[in-house]
Amino acid sequence: KYCQQGSLLEIGSAYGFFLNLASKYFQTTGYEISPKAAEYARTHFKLNIKSDDFLTDHIPDESFDIVVMWDVIEHLPNPQNFIQKIYKVLKRNGILALTTGDINSFMAQIQGEHWRLIHPPIHLHYFSKQSLTNLLQKFNFDVLEVSYPGFWRKEVFNQNDRDVRRGYNRP
Image (cartoon, rainbow, N blue to C red; front, side, top):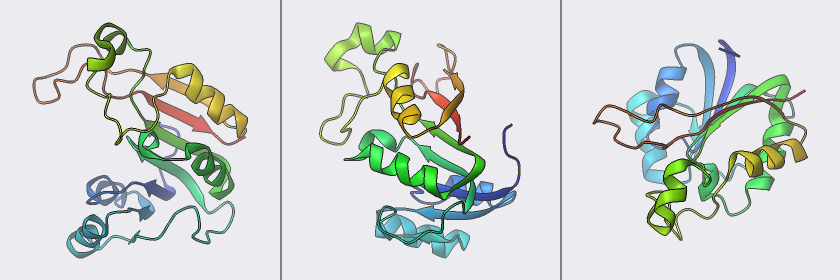
């Protein structure tokens, strides 16, 4: 929708399933902290997935058209450090797309501590639309879109408010 070709970076590539699909349209690079998952992606899909630390790895400024993080930001000890570096490695008018649960969602509010995304110590941070917007704006991102999947999903997904899909633009 916002970027249909160019260079794409995925942080938290896991076994490479998304990056494999994206590689048909983009020049792709991934970072994955699990050596086994990264090796699987490299072996099975021939992907460029690094097990290096994204924060300390040297990446030239303005290297990527789009950066994606699917259900990753809530796991990061210092998400602000990632957002700051992402801003640097994105090209001008580049896109950051990410998903995370919304702690202010209807289901989170009615389920409280029993909400399915309350997973300490695996989930270190819980974001609302406003708190994530504030974090991104602190590092000069413009919010282009915030969307929520429909309340009802097919049984395969069966998770009412799983993702908050967001598009952010580096001005």
